[in-house]
Image 1 (cartoon, helix red, strand yellow):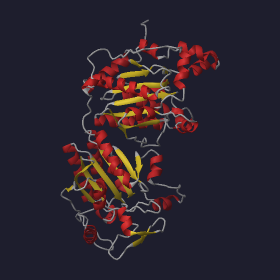
Image 2 (tube, one colour; image 1 turned 180 degrees about the vertical axis):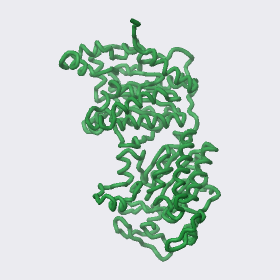
Image 3 (cartoon, helix red, strand yellow; image 1 turned 120 degrees about the vertical axis):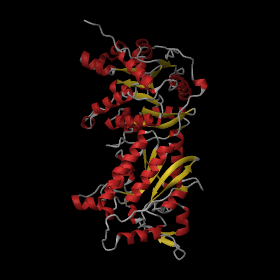
Image 4 (tube, rainbow, N blue to C red; image 1 turned 120 degrees about the horizontal axis):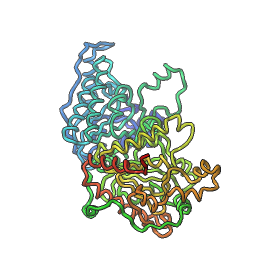
Length: 555
């Protein structure tokens, strides 16, 4: 049952189950049932959730379905009696309400669970309703938004309730494969068969602040393991930190976030005519200066140079950062999510460093761990399903070294990202804005068009490491920088990059706004050229591009 009593004419004050504060009921309801003292999010009914999430008056209910009694089940009471009581108490046919509506003016199909109906348990009716919602979304190519609140599968329907996991999981997967956006908002509580099926298969997962989410409940885990559970165990924040959720949001922030996601991820992407150059070579030679390879390295490493997020927020009209690799964690050295550049919808992904010591340490100096590359590949594949081009911002010394990275499969993660990026059926534009270090950089640069800032560098290894390996110590780094041909002008000549983006006098750090504007123009021109190519042609040309790289002589 909900942790705070439902308001009635005779109840004007209730006690918060978390902080024990007495809260005036009208104030609680005006605040979307969030405790004004401690911020605890009380549970909402399906109807309250629909009213809060959808545009006013836009919800149209689908024909609701209800569970039967396939087993003739009785515990302390017959199952039909329990169903009748739940229907009378909630006004619902079963534990999910589904239909159509609008969020921010954009059409959606919704399926909203209600914990007050037998603990939100998933029986045949819930499985059928969620599946019908997904099928309607697929048939009409309308985004699906699911809100979960459930204790798991419904015991009173035995193995038939278990089978709903397969039914709903298949429906969500088919929706994903068809490139129709799905978003799941996981609220308190979401457990068991719901979490282990459709709830975690959506393209974007949003945890409501304070929600408990997991497979087995904490009491079950305590009883089975006799272990003390970590602080905050199974909360949305706990799972976000471990890479399982894209976002954790307070109740009031969910609707605006959904509206932004629907805008950034909805419909085909287009490039304005003025960003579609006449057919010709991809290279944008620009003005290329070369003040020396070592000086270029030092300039590229300057912590005052704009970072990926600096560029993203200057170039993009809007950007929603998504998080997590769905396996281990969220790596802050990689940032990414859907964005819009002058109205052109893209998936933008980049290495993120920082400007201060605190930022650099928090971002591991822009050196990603395996979970960073897995997050990047997850977002690339989401972009492909949604038909969005991918734009990357490359700026890293290289992939993170260390025991933990090796234990979690650093080489495997980089290899999968490189191979996966090469297979994308959408346009890919990579921009090298600072350092491009080794395979850690290439994992975000297997692109149709590779652009490079005038004073950036791109190399198989750092000059210092090259000197140490080949010369015995790092003192020859300056000479090795020249020998490695790591500057934009050299790499343009070698065909590694397709264009050089001119920097303001003094470098990008001298005028970040001007640098971002020039980079934006170059990216849009590249997308304009690629926009006329079919997916198969994009993949073929990308494969041919890298097939031609290198110089080898037949013996």
